[in-house]
Amino acid sequence: MSQRLVEIWVGVFVAIGLAAMMVLALQVSGLTELRQPPGYYVTAKFDNVGGLREKAPVSMAGVRVGRVEEIRLDPESHQAEVRLRINERFGAIPADSAAAIYTAGLLGEQYVGLEPGWETEPLSDGDRITETQSAVVLERIIGQFVTSMQD
Image 1 (cartoon, rainbow, N blue to C red):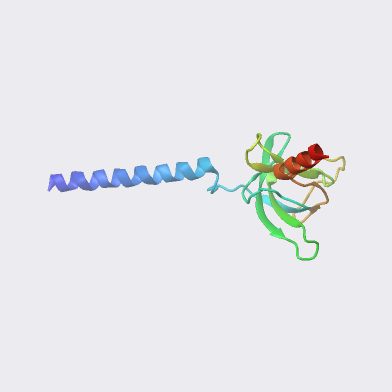
Image 2: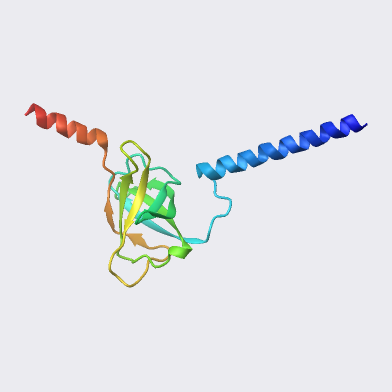
């Protein structure tokens, strides 16, 4: 009977260990946030989002202030509409701020960078960022370089 009890306890500890490793892996990868802080949503339209993905970071001055929540194609303007979730503690971002898509490193992941404006009114839930800069597509730059070298 005691051998069976030891086996049950070993199984319980192995299951707890596997669950802890899974939670740790998900937290480190950023795929799921177990404790999502309160925040507000803003949108921005871009001509080209390149390789930007949902859950990509949104940063301002190198500090992560939110995440990309959704990317969709606007059927009227044929632009990519990006919905950003900004953490509530960063509620003083000026309403005339600009958004640009940057690449972390030469071939790294893309993220949305916010540049603060001068307006005293802060962004609030449902606002739209009108000043945007699309992603720089490396293939397009290389293509322009090659065609300019041929001329």
